[in-house]
Length: 263
Ligand code: PGA
Image (tube, rainbow, N blue to C red; front, side, top):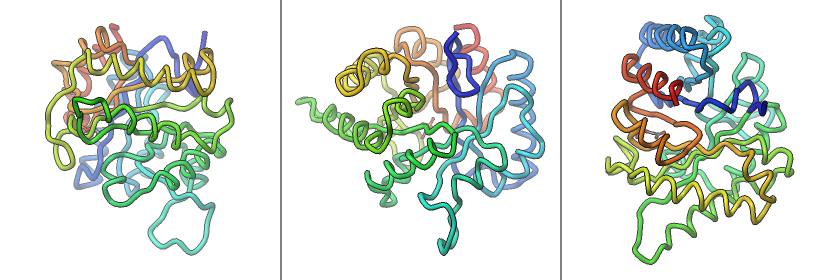
């Protein structure tokens, strides 16, 4: 059976992006233990991406066999005079498995395509799995948004070998569908998501061949919740989710895990 890093590819991958939440270590422990319990009960791989400051403590607590840790960002350099930054080897050394790169909220803070590509590269080189976020800000009737997604995808993977490309995770997150700050809170339909998955696979197949394109995990993010998760998996046909707001509510996130498990 095909494996994606520590992952069984036959089940969808659900990653909770906690963003700058929760406010205290105590709450982080509580949320983590609820999710750990559920993923353990389902015997299903899942991951959460807490803020850096909580990663070490949660790594010590350990997610067991089923709950992995993801980071929300990384620096491109190994070490040195970069105040406030965290390197890939640091993350690897505490047991981080996935690193979210190029999230639209970080791109809005000035992260460039070049930096995103360099981060994706350093994460692969350090034997972790990059979760490359791509997605348009708006949809235009002329289909210009497809060009945006194609550009972000190609440039994000541009520093990788074909073998490294095959082990990446692509998170399609249309900015207009992300809840809270940067998004407008609309939801992408399963049809929108399915069409974009096919488009991403076509771009990947043109660059790297069909076999590599099919090996790549393509997940969706943007207002995923317990009510739309099933149809996004069934009709959207994505390989999992990057979940923001809903990952902060243990009950709702655990329901999404159950839906993914039943898929
Ligand atoms: P959301 O965020 O689920 O709250 O829309 C998703 C994300 O930004 O990763």
